[in-house]
Image (cartoon, rainbow, N blue to C red; front, side, top):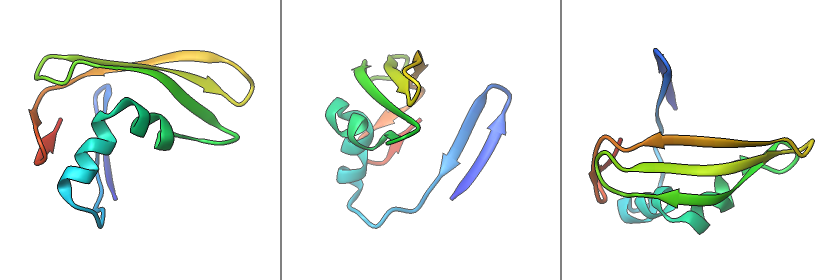
Length: 86
């Protein structure tokens, strides 16, 4: 895994042994995102909203182990299923 911080953005690359379509769907399907984004005992995500197009926004709610709630959000720069999601 390669992770960089560029200003206020975190950029990560990872190699996954799965077909590109499977990985893309895991990154763009609310139920899939809620299943893997977060970790029991730390925080969990829920209420995902995705506008899957360049310029579209994504957001979710997150709940920490202590019960604190927050919103996580961003926007898509590039959407090219299954090759790129920026």
